[in-house]
Length: 64
Image (cartoon, rainbow, N blue to C red; front, side, top):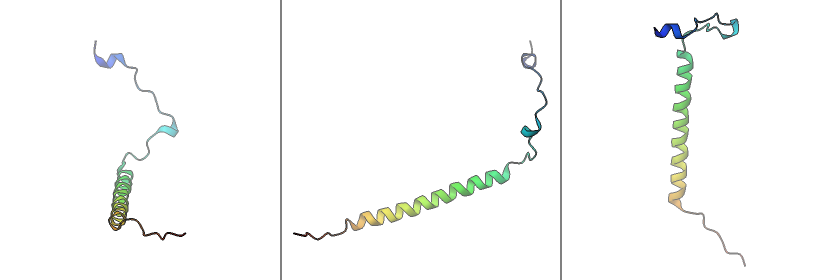
């Protein structure tokens, strides 16, 4: 038996589920921009944290 006979033929989609814009490139560009932005922000945070760790803790005065 052919594999096509195992499945029902596709029915019509409701209007709300139809793909009106088959091109997903704008969404893919936004995802890429968001990921690049997060990587840049993470690199900046890592540089600030590493700079802070190199300096060591802030000196404190002993109050008696």
